[in-house]
Length: 344
Ligand code: CP
Image (cartoon, rainbow, N blue to C red; front, side, top):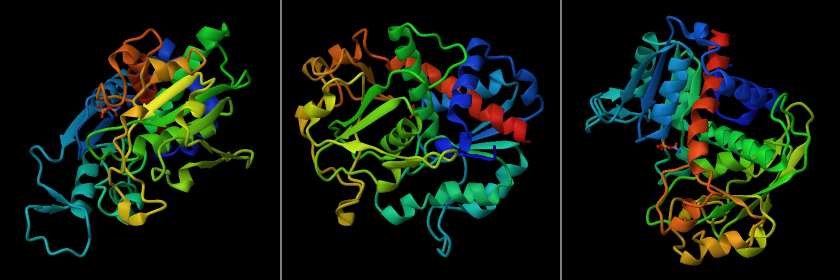
């Protein structure tokens, strides 16, 4: 595997799930693969979970790890071509990428959406330059439009929880069991946030054949249509997310509630891209919201702002999966790095 951006990059998702569960049982089984190999993690933005879980996964696989915080100690990087570099950015990404690639065997990139230029963000301008010019396997550690390591960890967490609650074994994992209803709900926030997490969550839930997905949000927050539809690369089957604007209706009978804020994706009104259109606190997930579900489990990628996205009672309840979800970031990343090491 030379790139990891979308679920299709893993090929057969059932096999990837089996591999994840195998690695979870023995995290050091493939330690030989990374001997004398170096991962470079490049952060244009802050991180806690991605930074730690990716480094841990790479170390489990026997790799050396270099972490570069571009905005803390490196030259500031210009990412657009054709500009006169007379500002504070001393180096261009087009030189920096091949230079950084000289010192490693694999690259992880975190570069968030700027939320001012939809075309630039949705073209994945920074990630694509790494894919094009590094000559190394590259994986997304949350980019302008996707966060696949998070969504894969979310899926692992849901499958584990579902198996435990329904008394079925995870040995020789397969998707062939009763479908679970998952709801992605928008929730209010004080700052404009990117759409990467909801985009990937939708993509990965549509890729998992045992998930019935409903997306709920106020009008104006429609996600980009390319994420609301998934074509299975093996069968050609197309699955589409159901969008329900009535949050209560969406929650009814749900087995999993995935809460997340995102700013306006600019689908219906391009001029609103990146804007906060609503701070409606009736969308905050509280115990009443959870009472509409089928004893549903609560998920959030973290970091989360309590009182806005979710109440203390819900996030601290026994039905909250936020910590196992974060723990599974090490597992999802281990599968990705292992696949990339195998391709070297
Ligand atoms: N969920 C997640 O990616 O967390 P960080 O931003 O802390 O890495």
